[in-house]
Amino acid sequence: MKKEKRYRWKVVGIFFAFMLLHQTDKLLIGPLKGPISEEFGITNTQFGLIISGALIVSTILYPIWGYLYDRYARAKLLALASLIWGATTWLSAIVKSYIPFVATRASTGIDDSSYPGLYSLIADYFSPNERSKVYGILQVSQPIGYLVGMVLALMLAPVIGWRTIFYITGSLGIVLAITIYFKVKEVPRGQSEPEFEGMDEIGQFHFSWEAAKEVFKKKTMWFILLQGFAGVFPWNVITYFFFDYLAKERGYDEMSVLTTMAPIILILAGGYFVGGALGDWLFKRTLKGRVIVSSLGVIMGAIFLSLALNSPIESRMTFFIFMAIAALFMPFSSPNVISTVYDVTPPEVRSTAQSVEYFIENGGAALAPLLAGIIADASSMHNAILYISIIAWGLSFLFYFGAMFFIDGDISSLRDKMAKRALDEKARQAA
Image 1: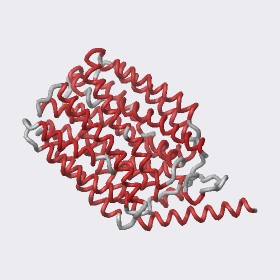
Image 2: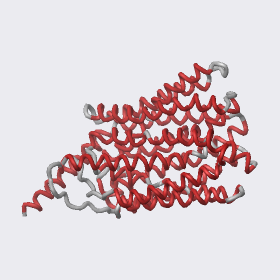
Image 3: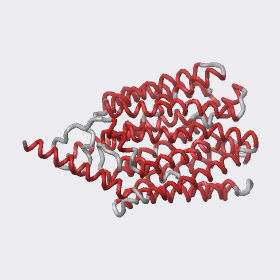
Image 4: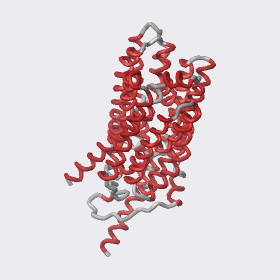
């Protein structure tokens, strides 16, 4: 048992490295906006199209990846995704003009839709009461990856060039592909469900279209999908436009950007773990716990981001304090949403369920950079970031509030289904 527990944390460590380096590669494009836009001679709108291309590709492929993950070995598919990441990043470093760069960056979206398999595999290593915390740990890699990308973009890219940075991160993707293929084991779907605790065999749960359809009849999922569409708008606008906003509209030089954003991103990283741990803690006391924590995150994030953006340009300390507080709350919902999806869906269709959720999310994500670019060109990056974020998070709060009316019944329904399966499996083994 101790060996199994140690191994599952080894898997978490490998996946953390995968997510950290993958996010570094994926999010580099934001901090590199300046030199890339200068080399190709493009506008904010054209740069937004570069981002939207990858998001559109990943959106289209989410349901396909989800289906494959529920049908076949998730670990091997994750290794394939990592290999694709490395290859497509190399391609984007090779091309020399704008249109081919749009196309090759779009191809990097193929592997961006690979995370549902990772999260569903982790769900089979950890029980429901501790999943948000584990997801929070894994998602710490996302802002840290952004920070690493920022350091590479601001300090290394001017020396070796932005293309060389892409060659480096692409190569790391290939290394991770080999590591995942040989070091991560597939485990039975559903083995960590509490109803199967102590059972040596739990049977095999197989994907079925009927089970997948049942998931989307749950009202909790309706509200989760709606908030997913709205909730990603701020993240994508901030990720891809905030550095340029600091430089061009608040007058920050490269070192000021780094010294301001590095601690804010570290606080953001901590927010994933704090939000996940708080969600697990409250979930043990009420089934609404994770949704409550998610609601707190979006409303507090909206308030303090608004205060930060509207602070006087010369008051850099005020801006920093408000941004730091916003950064703590902004990620609260992320680990809890993943756990909530798994709290109401059976093991054999979890990758599909989350893929559809991400499909809806990316519908918003694909529109966000292009919309922000249009608003920024017509008005300012300040207005693009502020208005999109406040409206989107306000809608997310309303959708979370709606989910609270149905979450108890949907979770209880799944637990009843798992209990029946456990009894049927025990009867089968006894026979």
